[in-house]
Length: 121
Image: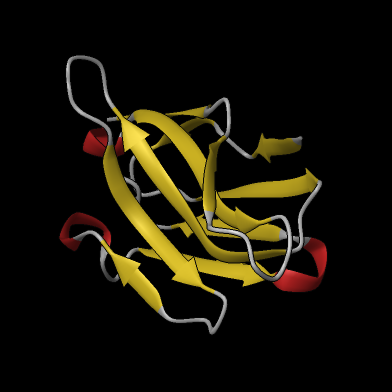
């Protein structure tokens, strides 16, 4: 079993910053991929940013230049630094990890419970 603990969401004014973190624990051999997704009411869940084990990152166009994803592989933790927040960033933010249980296993995806980010205008 895998557990994900997310933290860092909250209410912030437009232009402010928040830092999300997500720590994985449990039966994990390695975590090739870690990422953050978000879902606003009435909208589909979308990728915000992801990062692989080599540190290569990928961002949604809407957050480029404002958000930064990073990871501490020793701690199985991924971070999302969000600056210059806008009201349209308001959503539930979900951590997803792609992990292996041993060297030969396929990558399995696991989602966190989500943390709410609300940006007021």
